[in-house]
Structure formats: structure tokens, C-alpha cells
Image (cartoon, rainbow, N blue to C red; front, side, top):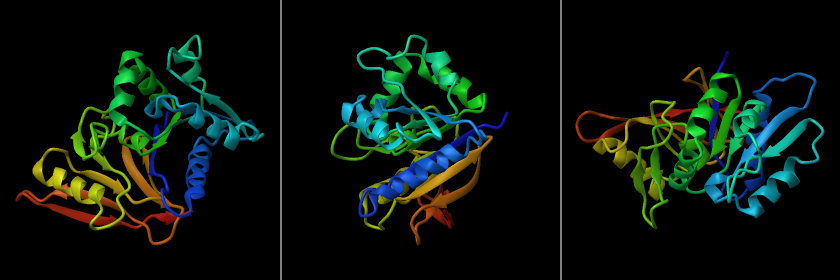
Length: 238
């Protein structure tokens, strides 16, 4: 059974609606044929904020090609059998927010084991920002405060770190990610600029895709001398 992960940086400035194109691409990866794609939104990283749930239902709830569902965990799971519900999905989309709180709540509810079973069973695992970091070892996060810190206690199905919103040379997320990789606080890994997604198949990076031109993904590795080296990955424009 092919296992897939699609990890993105959403578009934060300007053409924000283009993030929906990346989400639609994640849905297409399931390749279910003629029936509607069972597509579940997991907004744990936002504390299951009602606004996030309403956004998802507004975007996908009336699409005849999609059977839209939501898993919320606050203040208790909204479905009687979380495992069966998730295994019945074709695509899971994990929203952005606090990756530290996301992992803590997931672990309290036994989600890591269930999600790994889903992944190995062929459910497409996808998400943005915190929902991108979570599949990797970890990455820079502002979950602890106003600054950016290394967090390396994510699921780790992908044995690399991840940087999101990696756009400008002087942008804190970009510079911090490289510093943390150079110092060894995070292992080497992959970063995405806004509007770029990483498609992993069977635990290996297959390609990067983008919905905006002139955007890049980056492979960032320690250089063995206290610094880092980076390699640009030119994404396929969707």
C-alpha cells in the first residue's frame, strides 16, 4: 500500500485563496475514481476553533465531489470511534496553529498510533504549517512564545526537520531554521516557501509543487563545520 504525505506552507500574504488549490491537490492524490473523496479536516492545532471548522465546511461542505468530515477533540472527540472514523477517510488535512499543543493533545488521545495506521493503510496525510511540521522530526516554532525555538518531538515518520513560511533571506523563520540545522538543534531537512508543498511517497520526497510562480523549496543540511548548505528545489507549478 502506497503511503503519502503532502506538507505545505499556506499562502499568508496576497493570494491567500491559492492555499485552497494546494488543498485540492492533496485531495486529488487519493485517486478514488468516480465516488466522492472522503476528506477530513483536523483543526487540533487551532484548538478546534469554531471559525476554522466553519471555514472548512464553507469551502468543502457543498462540493459533490467531496464527502467532508471534521475530527475535533475539544472538549471530547466528536465521533464515537476515532480509529474507525479516520481509517474510513481518503485524505486527512491538519490545519495550522500550535504544533506543540497539537502533539500534546494527539498523544493524550492516542492519535499518533491511529494516524500511523491510517498512513500505512493508504490514507493521504496532509496539512499546512503545524500540519506540515507534524509529520517530520520537528522544526522551528513560536508555540512557546514570541520567539522561535527548536521543537523536535513531532511524529518523525519523515526523518528530517521541516521549515515553513521560508520566504525571505532576513525572515526570522528562514534564518532561524538554518541556524538550528547548523547547530545540530535540528537535523537537516526541507523548507517550503509560501504556496509550496512537499509530496512524499513511501517516506521519500517525490517532488515539490507550487501554486505561485518563482517560489522554492529548500534542502538544508549541516555542513559539518558549524554552518549549513542549502540546495534550491524548483517546484512543479500546478
